[in-house]
Image (cartoon, rainbow, N blue to C red; front, side, top):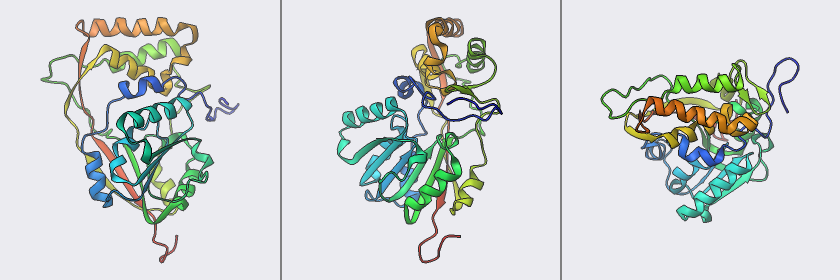
Length: 289
């Protein structure tokens, strides 16, 4: 599916096509300490079940695997599911993880009930009211929904670090030069970006809260040119398939830009903080509002 005649974007299965191979290397990790923070906030004890909706290659699910008896990741992209399966095997946790290729809108999909549901920078791609209400009914009484994202209210600098900053603005301009000024998303476009206002959606679905928690970042990280290229190709708006026959030309333009910014091919970044909003279900004895 692509954009309809009125310009309303509709999801299609090419949204993240080809990005999975670049995702783990290209994306910056969530702040260290996220698992410890959630273990304390949610009083996790190694039991219970987690469902990670829009799990990608298992980034969050695998970082939390020791906190639950079972972890289930759901994602519509076959490449993401394959990467998550491979990574779980490498970590020796295949026995307590399950990876399901499905859209969030297809839940509950016979997956049962859960202690915690997580959305890590994925909720904006879904039919949010439908998915929030469905997940609410999949959580056990007193369960929690955790919305996780990079902290976007800070602008970390690389002052004092050994390498130049990644030229993010120039990279975005280069993507626009190749694909046009309107953000691409699968077979369609997102002229107005992705939606916000998650709080109202979760409240409508019957959740209470939220509690906001920030896991601080700021740690110095080193990135190679290959890491930065992988980061570009991990994004939905610059997924490899969008460039068609000009994919190699685009990559060469990216590498030329990076060589000009850092002849040594090394860049400094600071680890972003991680922001979490914890929403609770109302215990069964109280009833749903």
